[in-house]
Length: 468
Ligand SMILES: Nc1ncnc2c1ncn2[C@@H]1O[C@H](COP(=O)(O)OP(=O)(O)OP(=O)(O)O)[C@@H](O)[C@H]1O
Ligand SMILES: Nc1nc2c(ncn2[C@@H]2O[C@H](COP(=O)(O)O)[C@@H](O)[C@H]2O)c(=O)[nH]1
Image 1 (cartoon, protein in one colour):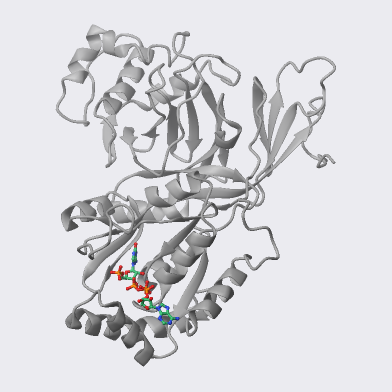
Image 2 (cartoon, rainbow, N blue to C red; image 1 turned 180 degrees about the vertical axis):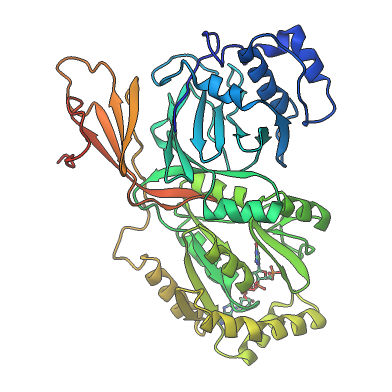
């Protein structure tokens, strides 16, 4: 593994990125018909490398991976002369990280705030450049970043000049989740997740047969704790009911569009339920997490099973009816389905109850006999029964990065060492990120980052103590 950081405008492999559109020699690439381009250009290798990268990016935000040939030499050349880019002040910054046979080039191509972090992969064994499908919300571009490989399957990105709440990100390159997505799409995939301190509250998955009262219970929770919970608005191909609003109750979607989005890896889970397609988009879950709220998902048992198998670390609650007769009555009284649909939902309910109670998917089963009692029990499970303050949302502290720093990794600790500490201010200048308890990951958040400020005089990570 190695780092590369080069501001645009300096000598070296990255120097012409961001300016290439103005060069004549790019024209041939810019006019090409597809991403499978081998640019026939250039004199010196730095130029050729950059044009290969730029050519792949020119085609916009790819949903599928695409390939372009480039001699392996280019990547090796790219690395030379860049020991460590931390502390550089320019934008247009790239890092290279080797993971097995692949080199992940991460960075912004432009100098403006509109340019975003891109990922390109050089596959050394095949001698090809690949632009992967990128899942999850990616970090906004900032002044620069550092990259540290963790466990050969994810790259920690430390963003310079960002908010304390937004400076640690993870690019998953070979985790279980990425492997599943790669298998499903048949293309190269990487996935972003944001790093959060400590144990942010887990999302809550609520499942159970149609008509059992899931929506009713969730509405009660959202009403009593509006600043604490955020509802994950699902996508569905079913038609809206009378009072339902698009974007509030569901994102009502055409089947062909939803199928394409599923194929493009935009969904955390999806299922065919009572004859329609329903699914939770990754974007939706991330938007709730971004708003600082605890995400609630109302999904069927098939969906819960898929979320359980994903890396989203959630609490799974199954709501069961007191009896099939009572369930039937509630469905009929609700009056939102035709007789045929009620029959279909009741038939499906039997299998769902069976699975809900015996599959091991769920952490808790609540019987919704008496609504008030069931709601009290739900609150108890979520720690909202009065034993902890309820109207304050958990606010994990951010991480204050020093203005200039170097980064090193020793075992399960990342030392972000302040460069040139101010005299007389030797304490709390550097930071240690303890990554031994990371949980979750893409899609969603990587939780469990423990952060300590340390005396910058100490170069050694081992023996670090948590300051009082
Ligand atoms: N404990 C209860 N006793 C009696 N009626 C209830 C109870 N809980 C909910 N209901 C009623 O049952 C009906 C179905 O509830 P709700 O719509 O919340 O079910 P749901 O599980 O969200 O259904 P779906 O999965 O189809 O969206 C509603 O009319 C609701 O008012
Ligand atoms: N797997 C998923 N199931 C979902 C999702 N959103 C809702 N649902 C479930 O569908 C049924 C029917 O809902 P209705 O609104 O038509 O009555 C219900 O059991 C929901 O829990 C989803 O995103 N994924």
